[in-house]
Picture 1 (cartoon, rainbow, N blue to C red):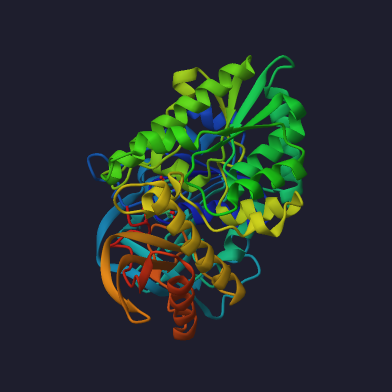
Picture 2 (picture 1 turned 45 degrees about the vertical axis):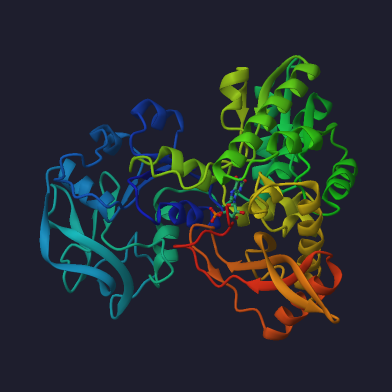
Length: 510
Ligand code: XMP
């Protein structure tokens, strides 16, 4: 397996993915990982990612030099290559000619890293660097050049250390796959045997080894793909000793409780269902501040979860569906970013309850989890389910959350979902839902004046929820949504479509 050390590049995640696409297992660790931790991972090769720093910055991330004498091949990418050069005695300097974007790469040696590629033509690669290597460390030679980088790729074949100034992991580098494949399969000698199936087998075995015969694991189920896949994996490993807890907070969509319960029953999971809707609604009474709502819901959830866990008894582990994008936020060394919204999760739970964690998906991306779900035979419904926030409909009801207002939003939301699915847009968009606004407007129905609620429709395209754009839904679909909502949902006389992108707006309204 291959270890990727992260120096904070935007594309580090892609490196690990590309390696896994070659069917070789790969994990990312922050560059501050200790040498012991690195050795314990026993990688067959190490890739140093790019990063925003310059090796001469005061706080530039460094790594122990010992990494280069572990006897495993190392590939430095961009900052990774500069750091390697710097630590091994070469020279890196700020370059007058910075390279950002495409560059033409001329290969000088196609015996290993560029195996199979031609010396007679140039290849388009993606560069993004201010500094460049000016003098090579001893034992190194150039194996490719570009117009502004005489050392666009370097190697020391004796110690099997390689460096590339360009980014092989991005799609714009036309030979990216070849370079990574040559490094991973040829130079490191990894066998391409990693598949989702073997991943599942390994994870299940690891959980089985980890959890003692008398110990129990709990897991909070939401009906979403991450928690469901997590639960199914743990269930495969330890069966009934996994207890899943599904809390109905009274803020779920129409028909959702039933469908989650049906799904869990069909998967044979050991489930505790708690209907706590009254408790949540009671606490939300009179609350209109978005952050306050989130906090109340978060605390109440933890309280209930804790009560239930106590009833189960002998619980030592909490299983969570944390994905890689959730992890990287917390290990990044760029410092904490401002809290825009307090996300609802069970983050504080393990410490409070002294539980150890099981997070089988923490190295994976959403689409890899989807692949696992498919491999596990989960229904399509789950695999392609749009994300739904932990605080549920409460953050889509602006103003106070009451039973009546929940009812209005549930009906409107159900219509949005139904029409979006019927017209084939459900899987094409990131999320599509209804929001209930805290105002009333004047309308006319029959010959009467009305003074009723407004529903906003939100539908966005996104790949990771970090940025999003509003979906250009066809006018006739929007017209149908508006017509049906106004005609079928009592108390609504106006529908608007949200045309804000993120940033500066967010996907949810609260
Ligand atoms: P925003 O509104 O911040 O949402 O643009 C980004 C994504 O996160 C979802 N979201 C949440 N998910 N707990 C969750 O599990 C939360 O508290 C929460 N708040 C927002 C939102 O639906 C979108 O996909």
